[in-house]
Image: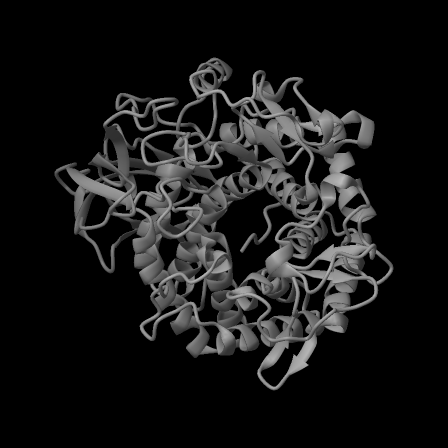
Length: 584
């Protein structure tokens, strides 16, 4: 059965299935992190990112997605694949609390010339940035969702382990290499590679998130130390917050940039540091220009192919800014999520198979003579997954065609963000009743409010309250009024009220059980987009209705994006199966 393109809960169900589908039964269900779409048949490979980064981020995404699916959904309970992924996340933790790489040929460290000092030794190694980050994300979400002490204890020990090995400096804390060895750091140089201070601060954001959820003070100490050092040492930004001209590979990695901005923003909000909030806001405002207004962001600065991890970073930055700084940023979150995040999810096996077999073939042997690879069911496993490296008009770009499982976790997390933060509840005070703020105009149901969205067919929301409340609805950018029809406040003529917007929102009251219709204009426009460099770029024209990108020209070559229907029935949302937790 076809999935409605704007049904977040159905998309989450499909994403859960993909996150546990590509596993190795000979290695206790260890995921295959990479896939080569140009092999015939397509091939999945193990690599070092299976460990820590992959296992932790998949657990984070699975826990989040399972909580938002419809009650009674067959994926609302953990399956065997999730149980195995959780076991891997915990199995990799050492007595010192860190997550370590396993002694397998395919787990050879990446970036030898940049990320560790001297010759390769036989020491056991812990990848210090993304593996620790992913694991702390997964442990935190598992603890928040289940309340199980083992996840909380493991998260505390991971934080303690990172604090124990961090190098102290007058400017803060830092990790001098990208890999920590069992025998210790091989150098304490401040900048082994240009950009390493941001790259190695990857755990900053999950550390702040864990502190905000738990109050565990060492997590705040770790986050403040990494943030202070990186901000003092980085050469990656101009005085106005814009990304400086890229000088080396680590600086080029846009996920590193977005993740760092997210960490600084969250830290500023939690620790009441307005200078950090201001810096992150300024950096985000400039970083938006690296991608597009519809949520495509590149894997590297000036690349023609994107990365879902970068898109989710920018989505979460916009959500945090919208919630705590200026609600106008919710317009960015709506456009990023409604468009390239959703459009990049694979919903149909036939379409994905046809696209992959249109890609140019590449006769490259499997690494390690195929001992750590599989050709079985690789395409089918990715139904519900996300186009790791899409371009503006296509799910694939020939510059880079490998699949990365981190993008599947990031895309799934983005779906949860859209659902969870679409509606915010503000409790009643002595002077006012509770308020429900509709920040994102998706079909969403909470215990207090149901929103049924008719976009992009027409500008209309049907909003039903279970208890008396005030409602605030964010209109599309540029709209200054809406027509609201609710029975308890009907005009004498029976016509809807014309309500002017205040700071982008229209406000009205609902009594228990009442449904209001909110009508607003969806203006159509077209815009030109170019990404890449003057010498190598991709250009397209996008056609919009409101904040939905409907069509892009020219059409993509392999799996075209943005050929969206406009005559759609509204999605009927349901109450969720689990407990929603704070994801950002």
